[in-house]
Length: 194
Image (cartoon, rainbow, N blue to C red; front, side):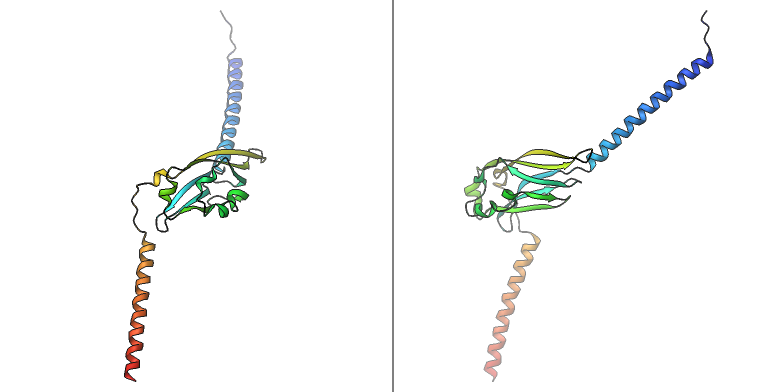
């Protein structure tokens, strides 16, 4: 029969349990570091947004993540997505110059179309490549590149209502005209009484 020393078997099991616990701890620590790093990464997004009150389309670039994005640049886009009247201004904005730093929650925007843009720009679509740097695991900056599609066709045929702000502005403008008319009437009445 086999002569097994129970204490030796217990020591052996204890040693393997210690090694397994150390490996599990190291893996858990590594996972925690990765999750913490991912939670603090920037997430840059670019899109077109229609403002129905002003009948304007903006190009918006925003950091929706929790980390800082550095040295943001834009490339591989078709300039024809910007209406002719706005093109010189857009080409002097952050689109051409880049953005040195974009903290979490911050954004930049510029007008790319306005007025009867639905007629002129309906079929316009462009890819936009956004490249930026973020902090890597060892704090060294890592370059990230993302592609976005900018298009107008999804705005076509959509029904919009005026915002509360626009309705309030119109009501205030109407009140201002009414007060001006009342003031003129009072001045006229006052002059007639003299």
